[in-house]
Structures are given as structure tokens and as C-alpha cells.
Length: 191
Length: 275
Image 1 (cartoon, each protein chain N blue to C red):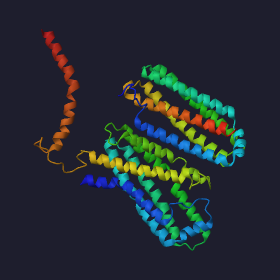
Image 2: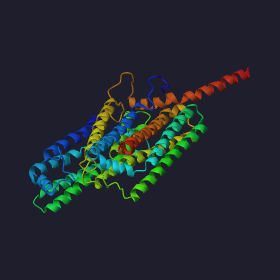
Image 3: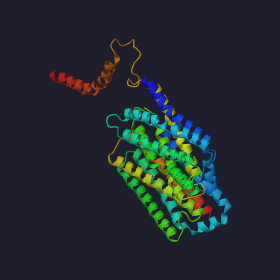
Image 4: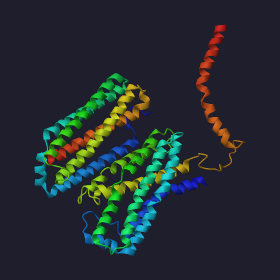
């Protein structure tokens, strides 16, 4: 196992094909979003003001916090402090649940206000982007739960290094994608 | 001989792509396919060039079937990865077969539409909708197939296939997720002709076919497995037929070691004790 060498790749090299491919796809959808915004900036501005920005902002903070917690958990796992790691991972799962809960409230609010995925281009992109991202959050939560199980079974660090680093990298990608979505969909469109 | 058959099957992946694309180009599906926003006249006029359209579509119906040998050769390698309980292999075979059928049926339906182009235009539009939505939206079998392949590769200690192939499979599965959106939209990037539906799926499915075909070809070439090659070349270092000797030698070398050291330790302890 390569330990902290200067050229160390978190997780494994192949994982980054998936992560970069995923991010490329999100980037393409965001580009298409910006492209269709060009034709109707005022409509997009009106629609973006219909979103509840505080919820989006709180969700950003929740995910950033969860990323920090995941980093701490990774360090705890490296130091074989399994009890600490379990607490931290539980915290990250809690953050993910909070994110999903807030997202559900937001969806409920916008659908009951009559903004469905088929009502206009902005909401079309809004629901697709956040829906795909929510799917990533769900997959990431399942991966965090798998990590929690590894800690409960107290597997040796050597065997799980790549797996755990991969899970952490995936979670950071989920966070990064949300930051991009929040910035472009909530903030830039409302300008 | 077996190796040659396996290699031919692995080439089925790239062959599917090439032959289906040639067929679609002849039929006129490809540079710009019919979309959900196409007018009735456009749909009817597409199918009215019957001989060319039928010829192209018939070629592509044959072409997509080359995916079946690829599914089979993926299965052979997954059995090697999984050993005695090849559940993911079976899953891959079932879902791979279903994917092949899901690709084949809509193309046959399109050929059927071109069979009698002078029917009521409304019927042509309806059949065209059925054909395209059947073609684009049944993604679950293919996604399950991708995940089964990926999980089998990641769990394989011997690295029959390189690990990055697993992640490519996960990514391909992910890229198919937007496809059911084709039911909701009649225009734009998420309609069936949109970039995130038809074009994305076509690109990533092509990547899947080529990556699986080429990595399997390499794995077959490099495998020294005896079932992959029925007639091994005569080995000058071994006087007997090598199969049994080789099979017996591997576990014998590994097992005694951990036992020997405590046993030896115990012997030494007893010696010192007796002294």
C-alpha cells in the first residue's frame, strides 16, 4: 500500500475516472442551464426569486460542515481511533439527513406554490440538477453507512485505506457539486 | 481454439457499435434523429424512403445483436472473478440479455413502420413515439448490468480486469439516469433527442462497448488459464502433463508455512524442556 508519498492519489486512480466523469456531466448540465438562461435572463431571475434562498444557504453550510466532519473521521480512522471515527461518521450521516430533509421541505414549498419540473425552463433545470444531486447524497449516505459498518467491525487500517479514502473523496465531490449548483442556480440566476 | 472464440466474442462489442452506426447512417437515423418535436410530415417523410430506411434499420438490427457475444464473454470472465457462487455473473447475463432485447425490439418496430409507409399518418407518429420511447427509456437492466460488472471487478483479488473498468461501468450507469426524463419533455436537452438523453446515452454506451471489448481482448490475450487454452504448449521444465502438477503445487506451497513455524517452535520448546 502506498503510504503518504508525495504522489499519493486519494482512493485509487480508477475512482477518479468516475468522479471526474460525474463532475463533467454535472458541468455539462450547468452549462446547458446557463445557455438557456441567456435567452431569458428576466424569466430566470423571477423564477430564482421564487426559491427559498435561506434554505439553500443553510444546506450549503450543512454540506460544508459534513465535509469537515468526514475529514476528521478520515484522520480518526487513520489513527485507528474507531470510536471517534464512528461518532464523526454518524455526525456526517446526520448532516446528510438534515440536507435531505431541508431539500424535501424546499421541494414541497415550490411544488405547492405551483412550480413543478415542467413549469418553465428554470424549474425544469432546478429539479433535474437538485434531483440528480440528491441522488448522489443518497448514494453517499449509503457509502458513509458502509464506512460506519467497517468501523464497527474494526477492520485493520491497511485493508480499508483505499475504500475509506474513496468514500471520503466521493463525499467531497457531492459537496463540491452542491456549491456549484447553489452558486449558479440560486445566486447567479437571481442577479 | 477457445481463446480465439473468446477473442472473437470480445470484438463483438466494438462490432456492435460500428455495424449499428453504419446501419443508422444508411437509414438516416444518425446525423439528426427524429425528435419528439418533429412534425407529422417530418416523421412520415422519414419513413417514406422505405428501401433505404429498411435496409439501414435491418443492418442495425443485426448489428446490435453482436452485443450478445460480448455479454457472454463478460460472463466467462466474471465466473473467473467470482468462483463458486457466481451470482453477479448470472445477474449480468440476465440483464445483459434484457438490454440486448430492449435495443433490438425498437429497431424492429422502426423497420415495421417503414414496411407500410402509406398508412394513416397519425398511426405512423404513434408507432414512432412507441419505438423511440422504448429505445431510450428502459435503462434499469443496463444499469444493473453495469453495477454487477463493476462490483465483481472491485471484489476480484486477482485483477482479471483492471479496476478502472469498474469505475467506468459505474459512470456509464450514472449517465443513463436522466433517460426516463424523455417521458416528460417534448423539446430541449431532456427530450429524447436532447444531448442529455440520446446523445449522452449513445456516447457512454459506445464507451462501454469499446472499453469492455478491448480490455477483455487484452485479458484473454494475457491469460495463461488452462480452460482458456485447451492445448498448452509443451513445457520443457516439467516431464509430466502439467495440469495436475500445477494445480497441486500451488496450495502445497502456501499452506504448510504458517503451521510449520509454531510446530517448529513447539519442537524447539520441547527440546529445551527435555534438556
